[in-house]
Amino acid sequence: MKLLVRATITGLLSIAIAFTVSAQDQLDHKAALTLAVAKQIAAAAEQQGCKVKCGGVIAILDDSGELMYLQRLEGSQIGSTKLAITKARTAFLYRRTSQSFQDRVGKGETFLMDFPEMMPSGGGVPLFIDGKLVGSIGISGGAGGDDVVAQAGVDALTKIAGH
Image 1 (cartoon, rainbow, N blue to C red):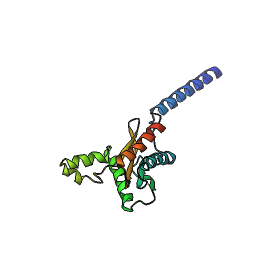
Image 2 (image 1 turned 30 degrees about the vertical axis):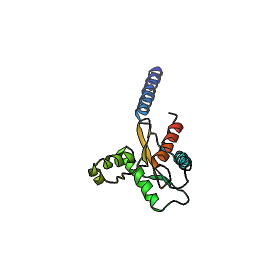
Image 3 (image 1 turned 180 degrees about the horizontal axis):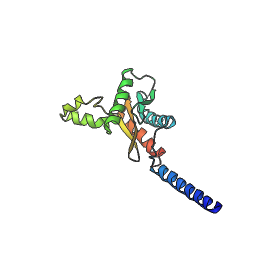
Image 4 (image 1 turned 120 degrees about the vertical axis):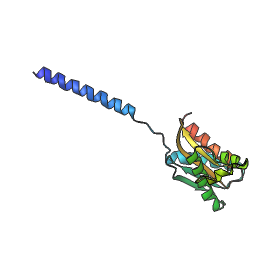
């Protein structure tokens, strides 16, 4: 009798452990930006932007599309803060660069101007890890091309993520 009870308990435990491992394997392991990574992305963008002339605003949004990190460099115009955030938001919401909207509006696709929270100006770029949107970066007010500065942040994330 004791042997039967012990065998039954052992069998049930084995099933429970197997189910737990199986359930854990089914969970999606979500990649997400941390504040430390957002700061590294911004530092890379700042370094690129300062090759021409330091200035401008760097906005990093998280995986919910909300502002995670904002860096306003000395001498930046006040209006660049909202512009950087809006460029980042455009890139996040539409999963493409804000420059792509600038290009399309420039070709006459003015209906795009009716899209909510859309800024048709270069400098907003989505941030992906393994094909999943984890945030975005927006740049405004620098002396150089905002897209080039934003791309430096994207490249930093790629390096950090090991890709």
